Length: 408
Image (cartoon, rainbow, N blue to C red; front, side, top):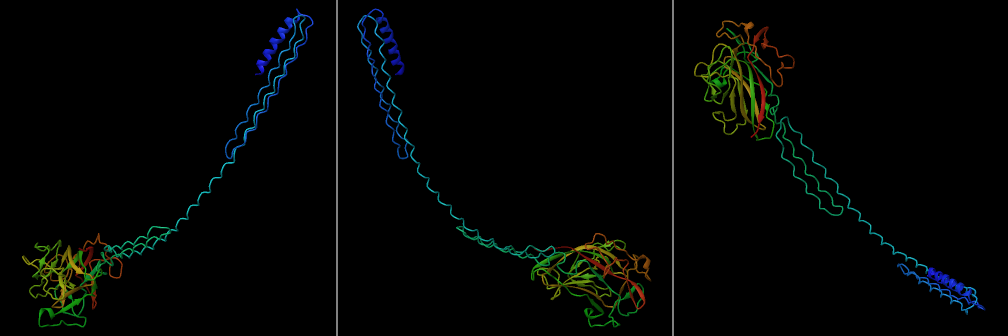
């Protein structure tokens, strides 16, 4: 708008200047008057909305050009002043934004229930069977502050089950210790009552000397069946048994190892050779050839009866065997000799007139667990000897090694 007014004013001046040079008595044109444009109104601010802009003022009108008669050039009419432009309306102020609602506070989480105390684990016996597992505790209900269920207790471990199911049996040293005062001959040593003499009974079972070792108690669960697996080594005088089952039918070996295990039955021939018996009480159901009403019986110094089974000599024994027992029962080791004297460890020669102690058998004891030691501790010296009434004798003995215990 301002550029157009200026352009028009320039043209008007040139025109007047041209005319003024030719005419006379020229009157000066009256300058056009321009009205000042009205200012625009200020926009009102909206409530929380942006205010509307003010309206622009109306532009002033251009002044009318001065009139003049031809002749001398009139003076240039004063150009009408340009109307003052309306001021821009003040923008409305921005409405105050609404406040954001306060967020709800998060609910306090329920306090967790305390964890139940675990039951104590039962002490397991050596190689014990696994106890029955405890039942799992009922879990607490989930909810605000729900408590956790108490954990079930752990089952108690098996008691006393393992190689030491029968305390004292693993590593048991069983010796026919010299005793009494029986008159001797050949390669015998006394094995009779400490008071002397040799009892005479009405039957073989009541005649002579019956040496009973301390009773061993079977551990584990009362009434539970267990199988004891053993290894046996030693030097024994052998004899005949009948009515049971021999571990082997091979003839005896005077210079080597022998399996002398015999299950069930009884002694044969009422002979004067000593027995070596393992008595197990109570009886275990289902065992063959067990004639005794109160206990099952096993022998550790048998030779088979198809060739020969007893001679004036002792032999090396080494074998493995198994037999069942009942938890809470007993094992009793018994040696019975009817003439109260027994054969000594005098070497591999049979029917010697006197004992050759320098040729006594020495048994390999390596690989035993626990290692073999003498009664009371110390080195397991061989040959095993015992003294009685100032004399030294070379003894019969066996070592029992429990290799494992199983339970069906």
